[in-house]
Image (cartoon, rainbow, N blue to C red):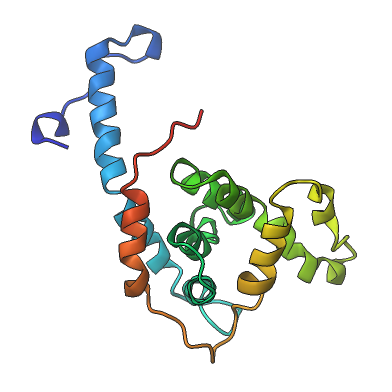
Length: 190
């Protein structure tokens, strides 16, 4: 964002009183934030490198999931989605899947968005029975075209990525991929 916009503020206190110039200022600010989005996401990932009840940190889980996707030959967008599938744990732990999906939505395919959005429910297959819940709750979505893709994402990459002995790629390996994804022109999602 240019310095001439940095300290400016809109003239309105209610949106119905705004002018085009006000919104030009708002959109310039938004463009600056979008341009720096990848760096914010990387910072959020680094926040996940801390205490965890698992044998590895939440960051290591995400790195391991992405490494498995990369080693299985997934495309770069899918690898980044695997890396960021749990980023919502930092900003919205009560609905982490939805938060991660919302973050990714303007930049990814419908398929990858759907998988990230629903992976939390699909992961329930591995733990819900311990709490007298239906581990097959995901089957309510069985007719969806991406159902099996989400089953495979969880089975092959997510649920098995808590292994302290797995040789995982470091975050630095994935940073160029994150930067390329967030350098895409975001799709408008209203």
